[in-house]
Amino acid sequence: MIISESKNWHLVLADLALVLFLTSLAGLAAMPDDQGGRAAEQEHIAAAQSLYRPDKNAPPLARWLDQQAEDARASLTIVALYDQDETGSQERAWQAAAQLGDQALAAGKPARIIIRPGGQFDIYASLAFDNPEIAAVR
Image 1 (cartoon, rainbow, N blue to C red):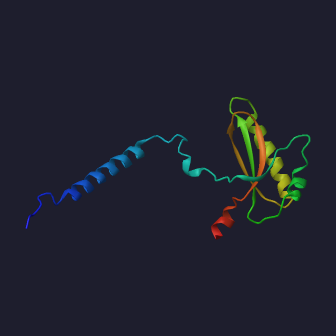
Image 2: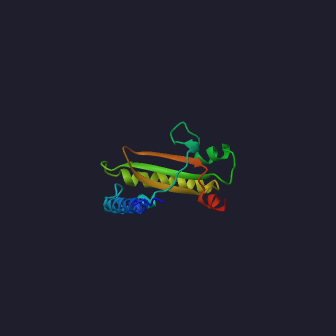
Image 3: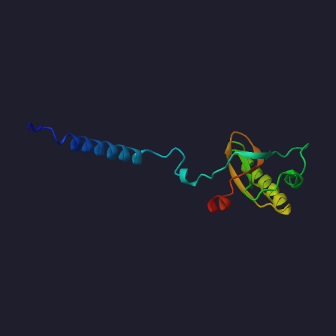
């Protein structure tokens, strides 16, 4: 019977894989967060089934909501973007989002409001299947 002298090669390979894993993990932990430590706080916004942008030709939000198909899984999200370089843009975004939020509440549809910096001022309402309460039930 011939006995091979290299029986433990798989242990050496496992040790090397473990060392590689640990050094990679240490490197990832030392990397700075590109989003200022807010990566875990990001809200999930699903693709919109319907999108509302207020302008002079658009119907009021309440009428637009009445025209949408009723579905308990859908939630309304109001997103307001503001220009960080423009004075008063953030306040304008807050006011516009609050106004749309009040219209949504009056129509019986509570809304999640997200205000964040963007390239220029913009506001829209998104009706999407991202209701976290319904998703948790599934």
